[in-house]
Length: 545
Image 1 (tube, rainbow, N blue to C red):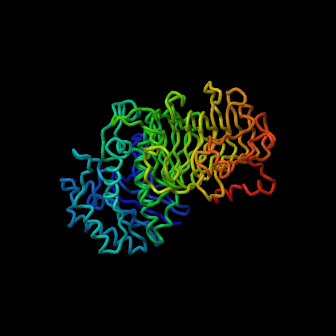
Image 2 (cartoon, helix red, strand yellow; image 1 turned 90 degrees about the vertical axis):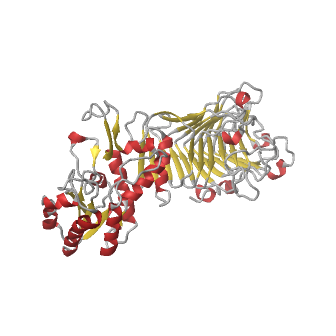
């Protein structure tokens, strides 16, 4: 059994219930320690290196610390004070006091770790974080280098992260809140030094992250956990908006740390972009957490240009290894005949997973990138990836509900839809729409594959097509799906592209329902899979993950 001894001030100490939500980093750190590691926290409010030693608070640590244990030292806030009981000059008594504690730990066979003080939340007029502890962090780092002791520069890291978060988002981590939120503080609190529980957990996570970068025995002290951020509209979580949580998640991008964002119930009227991989965005339920926005293609922008399809998305995923779970993404603009294209989801990345989600829209609900190599109409691809290299993406939709009218699932990615429901909305037209409009690049083995899905609708019978080719090498296959009567008998449309009949690949296998049909009644240029061919359509072969 290894023990971590904490020595420090109020930013580290264990707090009691009567001061909640104030919490110390040592409390948050308990969530990260590995099995076989215990924590004893001797940090106390208001102490500096000088007063901690003068009051005998280090003696219990000296008496207990054993070979293989660890001593975490985080001081600085109170060494800066002017009163003689606590003042310790940075390159004088401060270093001397730290050196004494380091030496005692080493003599006991323990491992000391220095941690610079957490930055105070203090922004200048330009929104830059101010350096409120200099030169104490530098003094600690110089001592660590001389004594060959690990030093985690929490001061520099926290200043950088808070500046990236911004003034509003960083409030969530500190004792800044309005009256009536917490019983212990009926009039509220304005404190930019001490942390709420969410802040303590976050900064403890930073320390755990830095420990993972160190060699043994330091790295094995903490769990290899992903970062967890929380969102709630009522202010009860770390963030009130998903956008703020995504902004905070960027702090972990350089270290390639997985981030899990949990979003509470409610309707979040936000337009979001995810540019960070290894990220999970999880709601409280597909019908409980709703992300909605209403941009549309025919909208005239300030420059006089139409917004166009690829600037309408409610959610833009522009990264690899992103997962969405248990939430709804909606474009609320309305019928395509009124507003044109209006994306709920623009998915551009590899190994994207969408599980138990709802995607609600009308025309062009979901775009699965990449874009085709070239436009047909001028400015047709105007948007964030217009001039970007085209990247093959693999996407997996599991137990999702997708609604729309015209081409409401379209794009060039390799996509497996499994156990999903595609709902065609009645637009009151002779032909109400097309479920798919693939633009599969030439030479790809798979395009869109639907397995064990349900195609439902409130449209009249025979008014919706299974798909049409946005580009000539489109590939779409429906396997063992239940197809409603709204699907036209011939099933597929060639988009008036006679040459696409030779290059597109549309196929079905053992579909059921009133909209299913014998292959002899489907469009003559489409296919019916044999049992052997259908057996090749496994998740492993289609996606590789």
